[in-house]
Length: 160
Image (cartoon, rainbow, N blue to C red; front, side, top):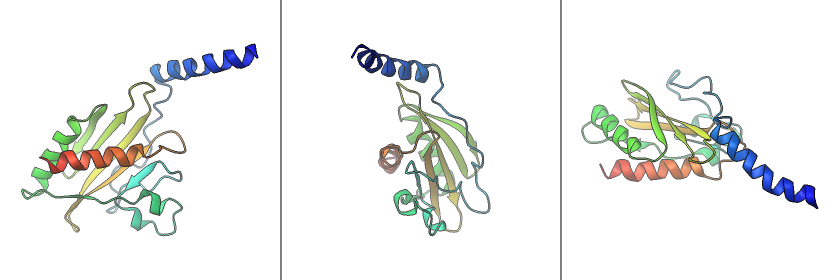
């Protein structure tokens, strides 16, 4: 019984310390960016959303990952990226780490455990939308965190 009680108390503390030390951040995944008109492929676990999920028919996470792209603003690509940047800067725990013409990459980090998710946005000139992808670096299930974050971003972006 003592060992069980010690485990119940110590394990959450160890996880918290690991998070604060940065051990739960994970590494930046290879393959981020746009290659041949595509953002990085879907994750193999339910911890990713992508407006390009339809490009991966038969993928085990295709239906889970599908999410709508962001519409372009009336001012076009530049106005859209400006609004997207403003919306991202207004979100807790989100930082922009790369921005080039037509592409933006950000990271979202949870407050306590410092889990990190990668967010990518690309202006698709053919579809005239902002394609997006948001995925967790670690873990098998994000419990809807990436979808919730993108939908909150969608609301903030629409309000600008």
